[in-house]
Image (cartoon, rainbow, N blue to C red; front, side, top):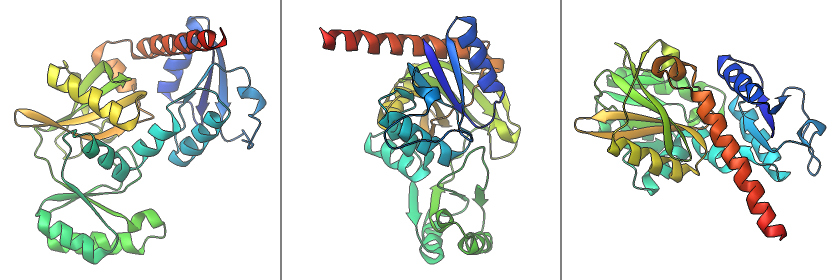
Length: 292
C-alpha cells in the first residue's frame, strides 16, 4: 500500500513509523504540511496515489485543517476530522466522554474570570485550570488558593488569544503519583504504561518515569468506550486511578509512542502498521463488493 504521512517535524515517533512501513515494503509519501497547498476540489499531487494518510502534524491547527481537506478528497485519513476535532479540544473531549457515560473528572467551563472564580470556589482547593487546546502539560495550573486563582485568571484574561477566554476548570484527582497511558487502535489496547512523577503533572514530556502497565478488564472496557466516544482511530487514552476504580481524563488523537515503545518492549509501530494494513485491506474488500 502507499501511505502518506503528514508532518511538520520528523520526531523519533515518526521515524519509528516510517521505518516500519518501509521495512514491510510499503511505499511512503512524506507530506510536509509547511509546503503543501490544499485546494477545494483537487488534492495536492503528492496525495493522489495514497491508500491512507496518517496525520502526524505537531501543530493542532495544521492537524485539524489538513485532515479535513484530506478527508474531503475521499482519501482515508487517520485520524478522521471528527475524531481530531473532538480530541484537540479538552471541552469537546470532556463532553464526548460524559455523553458516553465514561467516568471523567468533574469539569466546568466559564467565559469570564468572575464566573470561573465562582466555579473554582465551588470546586474547592486544589483544583486544576487547563487550556482548552494544548498538550505536554503546558499552561496547566494547579490552584491551591484564592489568591493564586485571582492571579492566574487575571493573566489568562489579558492574553490575546480567544481560547484563553475559555476557562476550563477541573477537579483535582488525588492519583497515586502516576497516570496511565493506553495506546489503542479502534478501542483495542496495543500497549500501555504508567507515568510516575513527584510532580502533580505526570506527562512524559514533563520528565515522568514510564513503566509497563498490564491492562485489566475495567481499563480495557473504558478504553474501548472512550475510543468509541470520540470516533475511534489510533488514540492515546489517559486514565487516572481513583481508589479501586479509574477515570478517563483525556483522549489524544496524534498520540506519541516513543516512550511507550521503550518502556513496554511492545513493538508499537509494528502493531500500528498491522492495523493500517487491516484497515486498508478491509476498505478495498468493501469497495470490491460495492463494484460487484
